[in-house]
Length: 68
Image 1 (cartoon, rainbow, N blue to C red):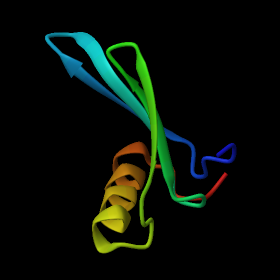
Image 2 (cartoon, one colour; image 1 turned 90 degrees about the vertical axis):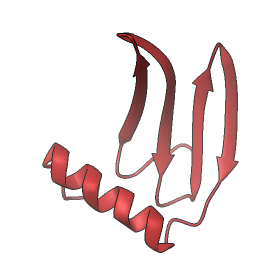
Image 3 (cartoon, one colour; image 1 turned 120 degrees about the horizontal axis):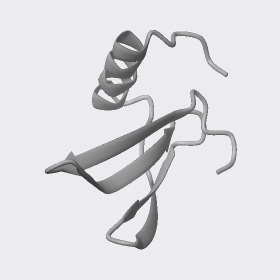
């Protein structure tokens, strides 16, 4: 769970305050994050259509298309 390639961190805000963040790794198929001070980790299928859509949209809005 150390590569996190491409390196994207998602932060979610409510009324200007960060309430959750998550680092998603499409290479290792895992996500780790923190919500309300609690750390969590889970696995996902990075090849799934929904996962690939998220990666494509993230690359589009950030302009980062190459893997790190």
